[in-house]
Amino acid sequence: MVQEIFDRAASCLDEGLPFVIYRKPNASQLTAIFQNNNDIHFVDDFSESGFVFAPFNVNADAILLHSDDLLTAPVELNHTSLKVDQGISSINETDREGYMKLVTKAIEEIRKGEFDKVVLSRKIVIDCNVYHFEMFQRMLNKYSKAFCYLWHHPKIGTWMGATPEILINTRGAEFTTISLAGTQSSNEFVKPQWTNKELNEQQMVTDYIIKALKDEVSSITTSEVESIQAGQLWHLRTKLNGRFAPNKFGNLLRALHPTPAVCGTPMEKARKFISENEFYDRAYYTGFLGELNFKNELSRNRNRRNQENSAYRSVVNKSELFVNLRCMQVHADKVSIYVGGGITSDSNYENEWDETVLKSNTMFRVLNDK
Image (tube, rainbow, N blue to C red; front, side):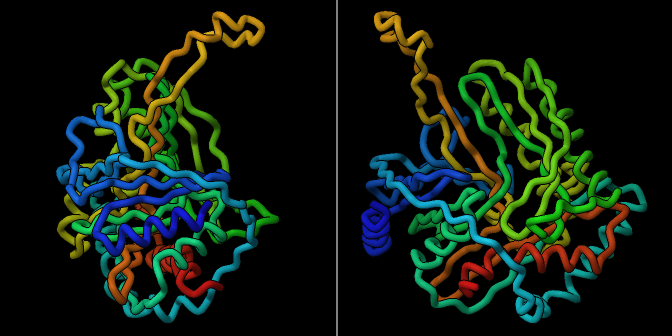
């Protein structure tokens, strides 16, 4: 049961042991992974198996939780109608001037031709005395369509989030990834009208992914652009599917992360601007996390009447990784909430500020239970 998972995780907090609890989008199962010691395990080449927690900085180490014990429990899906809490604007206000200057500088550099797009973010630190599992339960109740997680390592810290964005899913040599960009406030009864800025930004992400992966995959196809709802926000999304060479998943992942949706284009120039101008460490915000190389058993014969042949089965690796958006780091008596947005030549700094305020609402609703 869910309470048993929470009780076990609470014991791990007391004993200084790592764990992660998560629910996949639209899933009715809660999963928990517990590591039986407090060692820090790093990913080497992404051939390992476990729960990966990777930072935004591609040159920093990704953490791997070993699945020494795995528990699951059924959970109910609550499709709550979400409204924007206008009260968050005053909490955000202290960051306004600095972020506006940063966005203005980025737009100037883009118009000079230094780069095409850059994703700029900020960190909001507020006092908080809500218990970990109370916050996480609220998150599960409010965001059924997101990947919701609570991750803890005593030597690294505690993070939780409700991210709408898949980085990549694989099954054997087949993969699916998405291009996600554009943000508007949700009216659950009316699909948004997208501006050229938002449509161009989304196409920029799609084009970059195709170009970045072309030397690492044997095939790739794209879907039509669609509008999807994530909590109280709308986004633009394109799905990309294909195949990659056996034992080359690490190459595929390194080519994909970070995408323009969290960094910019060209990637190196955008990343340089971020490192020189954001003036804080994103850490695991805009990194990625999820199941890495879990074993998945497949039947070789779909004809159920042939019982003898149905006994032959194959096992393939399956990974489900998500971009760490709409997240916060949990401290003893504070939380750090991370938000950002994509800046292009068509950006308006007032609109970009409003977008980050809107995105911060995802975590504020968990803290305030509104």
